[in-house]
Image (cartoon, rainbow, N blue to C red; front, side, top):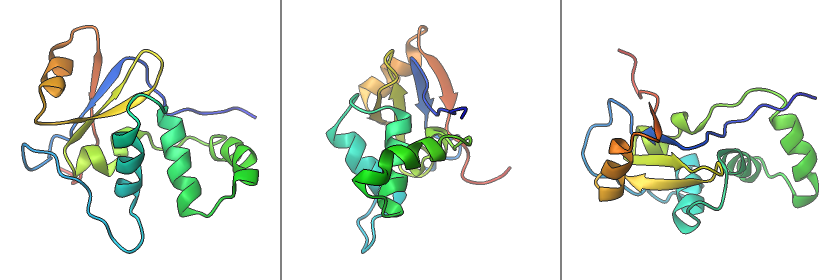
Amino acid sequence: MKQHTTNYTNTFIEVAEDYPVSKSRIPPEKNEKTLARLQYEKLIKNPYQYSSDDIIFECYAIKNGISENEKQQEREKFFSKGQPCLRCSPLAKKYGFGIHHNGEEKVALIPVESTEYQTLLNNASTAKTKAMRSKRK
């Protein structure tokens, strides 16, 4: 079975063009954790420990109650079809975080107001792509 991936190598996902402010915000806590909150908690505590595929599938597994025993089989099934990458993440679209994929395809959140964000923007050896817009033009 062909496996698709959402991983990038040495790429920086910039905040969306239509991100309205110049400072990042932590996704709010709600009764049931939102996708943004799940991704935020995983990435903020563990920079460069997970790939995009790891984050996307883990959040899917949590939201869908997939047990540890089922995870490997469900992950193969999940990635047998193309999945939206972190360019679609609410963290980059609504909450002001860039997402950096390093040379090993591991990811970290980068607040838009940080010096690290500017450094990555100005680094010619890092590929750049923008997060998806929240609204159509």
